[in-house]
Length: 125
Image 1 (cartoon, rainbow, N blue to C red):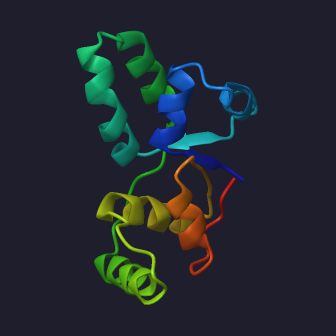
Image 2 (image 1 turned 60 degrees about the horizontal axis):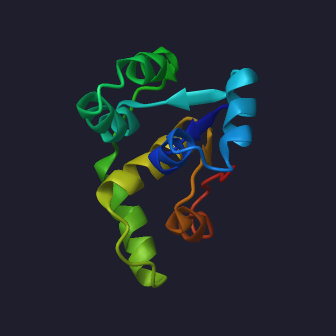
């Protein structure tokens, strides 16, 4: 199963986090995918830091197109609110929806995705 790597993991990876071995393994196995939303979160900061090599490498990763189903996002937000899961932003709901739609697993360091996975069929790596 392909793994969508969340920006939280990429940021930790770029900083030399202890998680780098896991991501290195996923990259070596060619299991990593990315989408335009995550690129949009990462690329501007890398651009300002003049990290063109990293930008180019990220853009070489297989990209899965994002197809937003707004009614489904509303449904997911209602599920969150009904279960006391507050403050999940629309961007993170889009990421969750993207993972479900494309039968991916999500590698993330953000705990709210784990909470969300208890109520929707979101696979966490």
